Image (cartoon, rainbow, N blue to C red; front, side):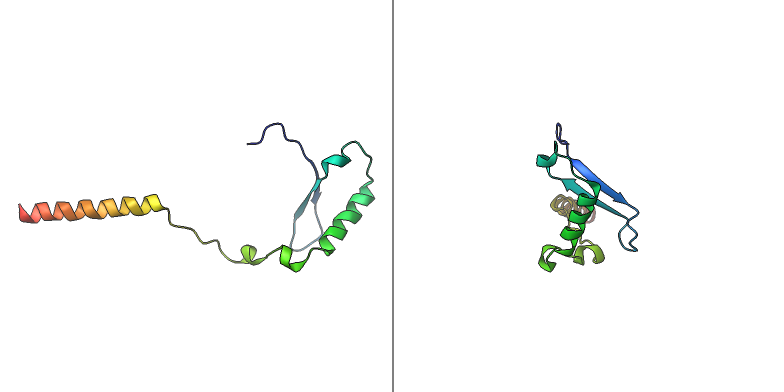
Amino acid sequence: MIKGCRKNVVYVRNTGSEIFEEAFFIVNNQLKNSVVKERDLINEANRLISEIPEHEYSLSSVFEPERHKINLSFLWFAAGVAVTALLNAVIYFVV
């Protein structure tokens, strides 16, 4: 959790898009005391969206399922269970 951090955010609901429901823009802190018109914010947001180079974003993470990594501690646990089961089988059948 970040304490003492405040950002001015422009939150856009009902974008009118069939793909995106919401959009967030974080306003530069240097503009905190200046007056910026709503129309200027909209124009700048549209400019940024239209000028994003294709190499700056990737949609593959949206459409491909995330691959889960196997936790190493789980592997150690499974190995311990297997060794314990093997030792119990040896003791049971030998003794």
